[in-house]
Length: 432
Ligand code: AMP
Ligand code: GLY
Image 1: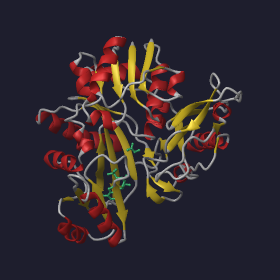
Image 2: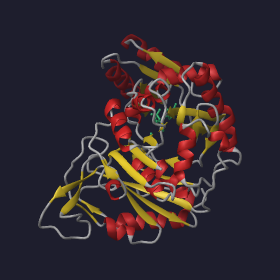
Image 3: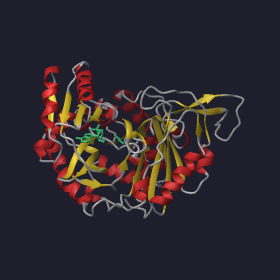
Image 4: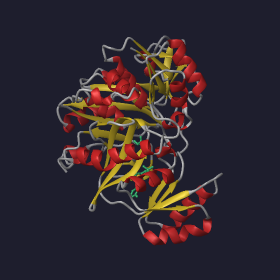
C-alpha cells in the first residue's frame, strides 16, 4: 500500500512511524512532513492547506490512501479535494470537520443528538458578555468560536480576565464566543474511528494541557500524555461509544454530512457523569503518540477501512499489554512567542535507551558543513523551529516504567531554553 500523510507535527510522525511498521505498507510519503518524518517517508514540499496540490500529489504518487493529520487542512476541505480525485482519504469533509472548526456548530449537533455537554451560551455582542458570565458564575469558561490550536479557551476565576478574553475574541473579524458551564473532574481523550456509519473506539488517553507542573500556567496544544488510564471506570469506552460517538455520527449522517475519520472525544468525568468538553475532527496531539505506541494491529488497514466505509468488516483491534507516556519538549516562550533556530542534540542518545522513541514536531535541518555530531544528517544539524519541538515517547510494562523511559530520554536531549513538564503521568503511575 502506498500512503501519503499530510501534516508536520509529532502526531503525523507517530502516524508515519506506525505505518512504517505495517508490512502492508510499501511506500510512505509525507506533505510537507518534518525532518523526523523524513527518515521514514519521502517528503514533498506541498502547501498542506491547498486541496488541489495535495490531490495532485496523491494522484501523481498513485497513493492508495491519504491520511490528513491536522485540523486546518480538514477544515479547508483538503479531504474533499482528495476524495474528488478518486483517492481514498482518512479524514472528514470540510463540512463534517466543522465539529471541530466551530464550537457553536458542535454544540448544535450535540443538542440535536442528545449528547451530554456543558450548557453553552453563544455571545456575538460585547454587551452580552457580562450577563452570560454571570449566568454561570465562577469558574468562568470562555471559548473563541473558531480554530485556535487549543489556545482560544480561557478558564478562570477572575471575572475581569474572562471579560477581557471574550471582548478580545469578539474584536476579531466575525468573532463570536461561547461562554459555558464549568465542568469539574478529570479529562479523558477517546478517539473513535468512523467511516460515516460504523464506529470503532481506540483506547483512552489523558493529555496535560497546561504549560506548567500541577496544571499551572496557560493552556497549550498539549504538553504530554499517557495511556492506559488505570483510574478510569470500567465501561467508560462503551459508555462514550453509546452516548457520545454513535449519536454524533448518526446525527452527522442525518444532516447529509457524514463524519468519516476520527472523532476525538474530549471528555470530562464530572460528578454528574461523562460530559463532552470538545470534539475534534482529527487525532489528538500528543495523545496519538501514546495510543499508537500501544496499538498492535497494523495501522494501514484500519485507516483504509475507515476511509472506504468498511469499518464493520474489521477484526477487533489488538492492543499491547504495555503502557506509554509521552513528554513534550517545548521551545522557550511556548505557548507564547517562541525562540527558534537553537541546536537540538541528544535525540539519538535518547533513542538508544530501551523503550524510547523520539517524534519530531517543530524541528528543521540547518545546513552546517562543519558538523559531525550524533544528530547530524548529511552535514545538517537539527534545530528548533516551532513551539512544541519533540515528543519523547517511553513504553514500558506499566506507567512507572514508561514514565522512567520517557524522562530518561528527555534527560539526554539538550535544547537551549527549552521546557517540559515533570509530572506527566506521575499521579496515575502512583495509583492516584
Ligand atoms: P477546548 O479547546 O474546548 O478543548 O478547551 C481547552 C481546555 O480548556 C480543555 O481541555 C479543558 O481543560 C478546558 N475546558 C474547556 N471547556 C471547559 C469547561 N466547560 N469546564 C472546564 N474546563 C474546560
Ligand atoms: N491534545 C489536544 C489536542 O490535540 O487538541
